[in-house]
Length: 418
Image (cartoon, rainbow, N blue to C red; front, side, top):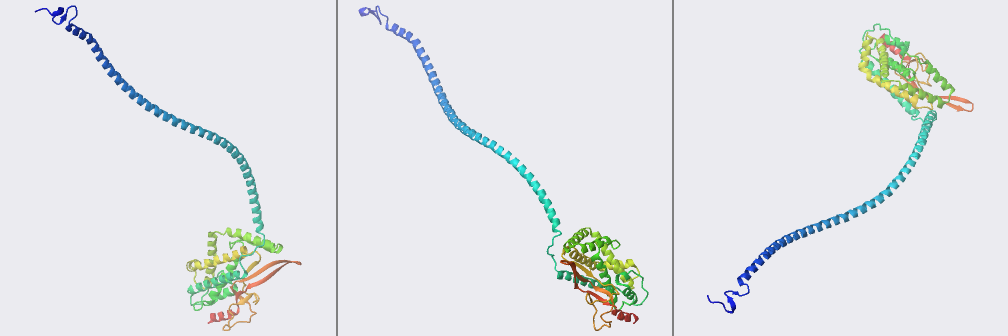
């Protein structure tokens, strides 16, 4: 090979490194650099990735910070409202303490007022009781008039008449005029009518029986209207005498109030059992009259017959009698009432009696004859009046007692002989 000009040998200049050497040197020099660059690029990528992550965290942190700031703001607002409420509560608490002090004061005043009210109530009750006791003796308007009482007596008489007629019509009397049982009829209707009841035949005409029943029931009813002891066998003399004494000594108001009070307590003791006992006694009286007339031989049978067939009408008579008694004894204070019935044998008095059989078709004695029996209860009103010369008692007959005179015995005797 020929030598290169200028002292060059191939690709090489004498005294200088060849191109290949330079390239090789450069490459050798660049090899670490490229590796560094690659390393740096990797680090750069890592740094960018970390930066992005940090930026993401920063964004999230910023969001969290904003949320916390919002929460803080809300908490501060809530805290401020709490502070406002606390301030209000402090005021309310103070107001509550003041109200408690006021309540305590009012409680003490209430206790004092209640004590005063209790004392006032006790005083009022005492005064009311005293006033009630005083009013019992004060004059006040009676709830019923004389006419009302008369109508009640007339209604009672009507009930007795109807009951007597029903009982007399319901009995089957024997046709033979046989001897009759001795009985207790005499004390009810009187000896004359009781004897006539035993002698007259009642099979064809029960008039004598009805008359005796009227008289007997009226006598028993008058006892019930006047008694102080509902036991027919009891003693009532003490209360009867006491009432008469008070009527004589005290004013009409005081005696009337005493009567009303005594009767109210007396009636309070009259139980249903006692009323049933009254019915038993009335039934027994009616049975005595039936036995005296010859209607039956056995007292027990007569009693059972009257109770079963006529118990309710007799019970109604008892209830009407007790109602009339309450009106006369308890409801009316300003005046006294007394029912009247005439015993057999008394002289007829046209001022207080009326002949219940005053008929021209009946043969009878003059109007001045004797009374056989009472057929209708009468009513008398009396009132004690205070005057300058002392107390006087005025008496007025409101309803005359209806009676049958002994003149009817003549016709009944004729019927008995016939």
